[in-house]
Length: 308
Ligand SMILES: [Zn+2]
Image (cartoon, rainbow, N blue to C red; front, side, top):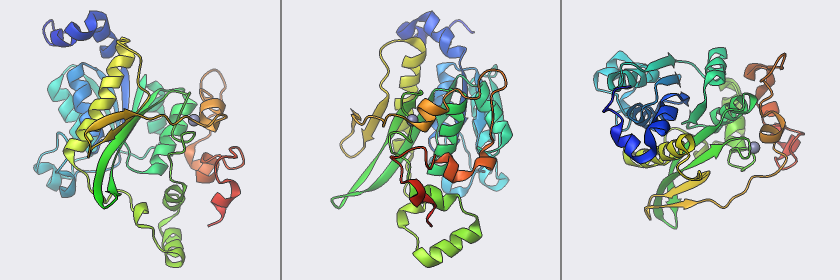
């Protein structure tokens, strides 16, 4: 490690803290508006080992917020994971960044997550968030889940986001944060989806990925997560496990929401793939209804989930 490069970091959390950060293997799921900020900040913080997973390429509409992307990436259709890898290696040529352009249900994605120490889930759809929850639970991987959001409240524009540290004591499922309608819709084939929408219509909120997204809001949410990651690795203070950024008021608050007990992922499958001969059902085999734990979690809507 170069002598001067991290001296200002070490002034805050010490040489040992810097060593712990450098030794952390991270996986970043989603390298879009949030994940690209995470990759950049981790590179400056001194993390040396990365697994980058995202299925998308750079498009013109992502150039308002994709950190590291340049104009030429639009025509080249550069994979977002390649943009992040290029940026990380430009900041730190000694870094090892594995780039996987694939969905989370690819077996390579599962392997990469199983090899990480800390996961950052920077996803914009709830089905992908559930898949991340399943995989992190299976391998007992602590995961920072990030989300930014925009909307309207009392006729005023609302924007902000949240960062949740999922470590087997809470996750998105037992905090009740996953939109079951959206996940059910995403789990359908295009033909099934079309038939469903013809009959039931499309709820505007279900059209994830098309809403407003601004670089500065993503930057705040990512910075909150990176600061908590720094705290986690260095032990500077106690970690804040659920933080909400209210953009209109420019305040960050602790959420007082508590997880439901008896969570299938926190209490049931946590660490289930670790150890000799552990079962490893694949995401493809089990399907979304089982992912949701129908029949196992009374606090979800149960069989009603299968109704449409
Ligand atoms: Zn849970």
